Image (cartoon, one colour):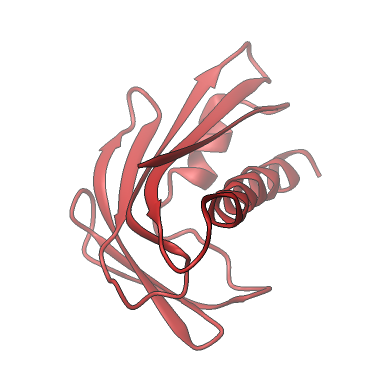
Length: 139
């Protein structure tokens, strides 16, 4: 298994960042994301993200508001990402009133690409998600 971890500081409250990243259905349409649909609520909810006509289907595996952490997994094998057996956890830790760190860690097996290419793509997704939360909260 390959592990990719992105840890970044955000100049915003942990609860504010959680409000964005912890919202399983909150993925924004734009760029390569054409549509987002969520079925169900809480653990077990299914999120379908359509990108360039292809679908990535993810299931919420754990969601702990008290510890500001959640885990999700890709459950369809016909998705466009160069990974299989993918699971990721996002954990937000307060570093003061208006500062926090986001730890986004995923594990997977590269599929159809070498480990470096797959890792760089996943790292970019995580960094982009954190940057999106940062922009939404700090302008």
